[in-house]
Length: 303
Figure 1 (tube, one colour):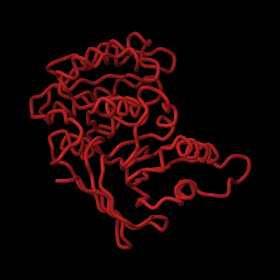
Figure 2 (cartoon, one colour; figure 1 turned 30 degrees about the vertical axis):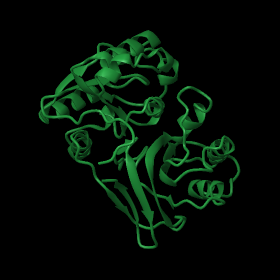
Figure 3 (spheres, helix red, strand yellow; figure 1 turned 90 degrees about the horizontal axis):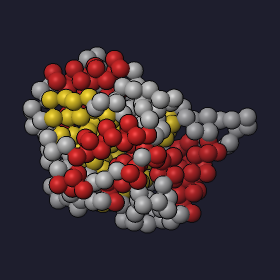
């Protein structure tokens, strides 16, 4: 495959995976379940020292969360860092992180939601990462999800064929895949983690927002010049959206549609990733081809 961004080495059975909690606190049993699932698959697993801590809504103090993530980034034996969950917290520690040893000992960063900030920061450094379910979603009952994540980590990438959507815009595009949670993406505009979206294929998803706030985020991203020069746009889950006291007048998907209707690049709605049960992995920083026709939409990793 022809990668424009550096790719961490794919994992092999026996490799070490670190589980850390850089954002919200998590029930310990969920982390232990993820540990079991990954050990059963043949990986060595280390739960970072403060990963199960609690400090208000966070999984530990800023210092504790920073120390765990920095230690995992620096560990030459660690081949992947699996975030336990999202929530909020990475904004408070991102500027303290040192990626010097990461550049020497690169590893896959795995997660979504609040982890979008770390994905974006790594993208600015020129590295790929994995937008995917986190430890909180791993379980014996849902082992197929964990297996799919581990398949991606071992280089077995999956292309996607999707049903057509009434709001899709037809066309074909090729470019580097970037993006993640829209709330996070708009919150980092102008920062050192801000994404360069020009000629990229942007993926966005979000959860639990009032529709007017979703509309405001789309217009904020548009006014910042983030939507005008894309190669393509992929919309994932826009789940649990709230109407508010009065009807906004448009659905979540229609809000996105109207924000980008003046552009000509292909747009794919309904990609199965985000804050939903069906949350497919995506390699951010990889080159992909997006093709949207009347019959289907395809997202394919470029050879």
